Length: 457
Ligand code: UD1
Ligand code: MG
Image (cartoon, rainbow, N blue to C red; front, side, top):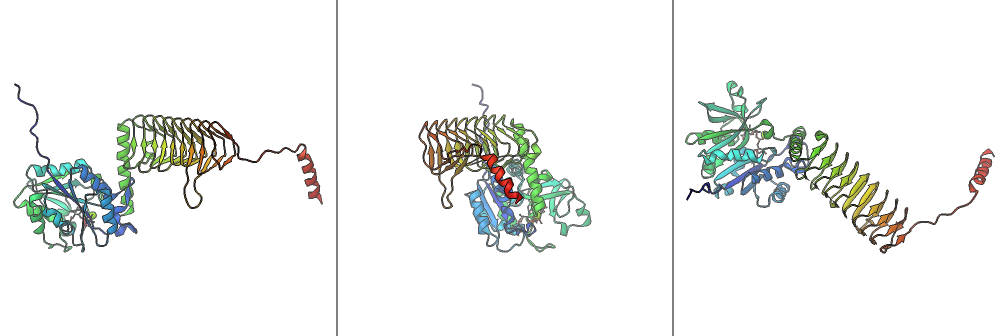
């Protein structure tokens, strides 16, 4: 029998991620904590928590500042298993990590330290950072070549080995010339992490407990590795300009991904996505379209220019816009058509439904093949509660109609243009809810004569 080619199953290494989020973020000049600001529709902290889980972190600890119940709550929503620890005094990055001492004591094979304000690091990079630990390294540091190293910790190497990280304030002029710097993130071997962190002292220019000192301490007895990343990935966010820069980078990634997956973006740089946007292949997106969170667009659908979608599903072959707005709960059936200046909210539209011009359809369902004329409004709100409009299949709603909910329009019924519909319309019926037209023959010349005479007086 030929020997089996199966690789020997290696048990996956367990991983604890500690996310530091105790920063004050004063430079954001915001009532919202820094890590709760958004990039592509998800908080900075949400991005980091999501990425470390994707990179295999089975346990999560988030370190928050004192009285930051909002950050703790957001962390629990973004990642329910997250344990929350409070750093009561801000005494440095190692001190912050040690706030999660309890989590460290119940160790894992790998410990990864991430920053809550550094949202662009990819899962792939976190995995690369963990890799040297499996090869026996005690510590792995994420470094990058900085265009301008000012403010970063410099990676000090001797004979090609990393021996220390020197913070800007403590660095000699020679050391300051080094451009290979610390991205801030670190991975430590779980069985050694607590011992290393507890030996860190605060004998430096700032009087803080520096996580970066882990390198020198571990390096005395163990191997220490450097993993190189792109500068773009380790962009940390301290102010609104950096927040906008992170948005730019993230949007560029999303656009590249959609193009690679078979989506046509006519002018990619003008289209904005959410972290969770799902577009199938052969979707076509025209210029200047914004996708808020929770949008799914199926194969072959077209999103015309200047449309805004959020919390919406667009089925195969449907067409949206130009200038359309799909709000949360909008669900368009196959080949449905939503035209210009149409708003759809919390409404299910069957296959082939047309709402081509200037309409609001909210809290409604519309059966397949129905045609909603220009200027139709579902009057869903009475100032206190929302009410539903139910339209059957194959119905025809004449232009400029108001459908006062709760109301039902039966299958294949007609509503005459300009109607205000307040009672249910049976299937196959015609409903007219408007003043009857009156004709006064010869009225106009008589009126003009009277009016002209009155003006001369
Ligand atoms: C840190 C690194 C530096 C690296 C840089 C990359 C240290 C000592 N220095 O410096 O080598 O080049 O990141 O951006 O680690 N935090 C807390 N509690 C604290 C202190 C910090 O939660 O007491 C959090 C911050 O909110 C932030 C992160 O830790 O998310 C990093 O702290 P920050 O003050 O930005 O460190 P840097 O001086 O930038
Ligand atoms: Mg920083």
